Image 1 (cartoon, rainbow, N blue to C red):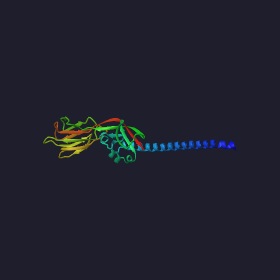
Image 2: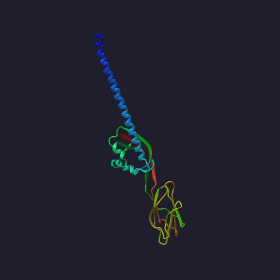
Image 3: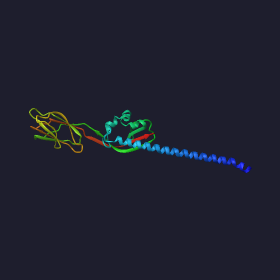
Image 4: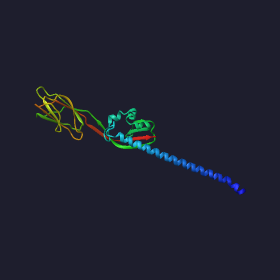
Length: 226
């Protein structure tokens, strides 16, 4: 009897220790499950947001995986949250080559998705080409552009009736084409503009403004925390 009573405190200590260990194990397990759930949720949001940022129909891209440099440079947190509502419910940080573009909330930790993109910047170039001696004269733009603005100022007595881009009629008027017009071009091929006129066009009769692009590779980072 006395031996059993003597062993009772040791048994109670052992039970308390076992309960404590079990409790700690349960807490750690629950915390690990919660962390995994949060990580999966953050990753899902980060992947989805990065997809939208480079989507061809999104406000920052000119085509799939090609970002517009001007749109990126002018991005603000308010515009970002308006364009991508998911950012309102999470702390989000977006970077380009490691440089911060925009952030909403404190996204020091969290999950980060990185993807290689192109950043495109278009420049305005104006040329007054030297024209040949024929009644149908051509000028080839040195770089591809999605459109061009053509300004025609033929001398009195000379009429420009048709303007073609790579053989396709883009401007036509039997009475004469004059003034300024913007024509759509293919960004996949170099454009040759041809001018059909009633007489030779002297130099200075045609001015062409076009918008070639320069692209560079960059690393887009999207971090979602919470």
